[in-house]
Image: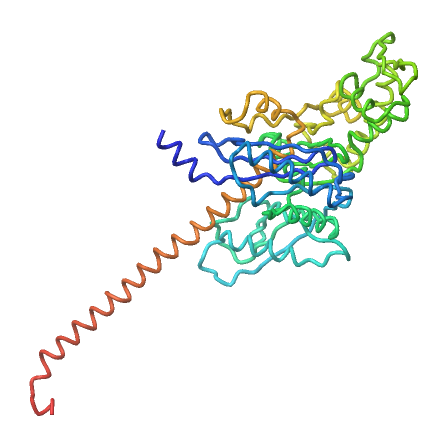
Amino acid sequence: MDKSSTHEKSAPIVVGLDIGTTKICAIVGRRSKNGKVEVLGIGKAESAGVTRGMVSNIDKTVQGILAAVDVAGTQSNVEIKVVNVGIAGQHIKSLQHRGLITRRDLNSEISRRDIEKLIEDMYNLVMPPGEEIIHVLPQEFTVDNEPGIKDPVGMAGVRLEANFHIISGQVTAIKNIVKCVNKAHLDSQELILEPLASSESVLSDEEKEAGVVLVDIGGGTTDVAIFHEGIIRHTAVIPFGGNSVTEDIREGCSVMRNIAEQLKLRFGSALADENKENEIVCVPGLRGREPKEISVKNLAYVIQARMEEIVEHVYYEIKSSGYEKKLIAGIVITGGGAQLKHLPQLVEYVTGLDCRVGYPNEHLSKNEVLPKQTYEELQSPMFATGIGLLIKGIQKMEYEMAGQTQQVQPKVEKQTKYEDEKKFGLFSKLLETGKKFIKDDIKDEDFLK
């Protein structure tokens, strides 16, 4: 009992804020005793001010953030002030770059500070006008011309080089997100690329090592992240998602948008051939008009055409990354769009790679805080990004806390040891010789005069 209560006090509470095209979601949580993530509260609100992952209406977005944060704060009994925010949108770009530093101190080993300095240097890269660096992700390191080193901390070396995966975004899009968060009386601890967050919640380390593609199908965008040998190799954001499918149904079946959304969720399928010819759905007509009959197979044809297009875009990104033949773990689809029936089969058919749906439940610890229904809802692919943002925030806090303890303790110990030697070792010797000098030599009274 005591152990758990002390852990609860020491484990920092973190908030992930997913500002999506269809929903704004705030998730409050912390690291549990068993190393998993314990969710303390969750708040959801409709997102009316975001289009294709980018803020299009500040006031509506702020209202959504306030509503989601209010519910999450009340449920978790936490006053929310700082959040980890997800960022996506068509403006996201990625590039590869190489950096190096030459270390002056030859006697000391390579420290985290050296790696941080190398990363800081990358943030000073000259970007095209209107673009800003969001993430600098180190890949392999090279120490004194010895390549392929994953973690050089503790090694001896003079010349430290690294390949970097740099993710940039549009300055205005980034500022708009930060502005919305600040207007909701919150501070953003960090902006995190959404596919990176989703990968934390649904991918295992083995999959990242083997080679895997994460495809996060959201409402406005489809995010792609490719991992190989545990390192992120390629990122992309495709400007189509679940809303594109809904719009196609609205036009193709001549129905209202809300009915198109319900048709997609309840009867939608990504493979038309999996549906029977004679299945019909009856949709109520507009005021005074006859109900409309829609064939489930025709509905699936409309959905399949758009989903094939999205998967083709994903396949193009896989081929252009150069890792097509190295993806042993295949494709993992997540996000709200991954709940579409027969989608894994369509992905396998188009790309020829294995496919599974990624659920964020393996990182969640069971808790008695949340109602059972809410806990089960959290395990949906829809919340992969929100839980991923929470995990990323926890990791950042733990990294900073570890860095502080590493920096403080050794320095203090060394300093006090050295200070003691300096004060008492050398000083005591001087005192002894001084006393001896006084005893032996200062006897003559004339000398004292």
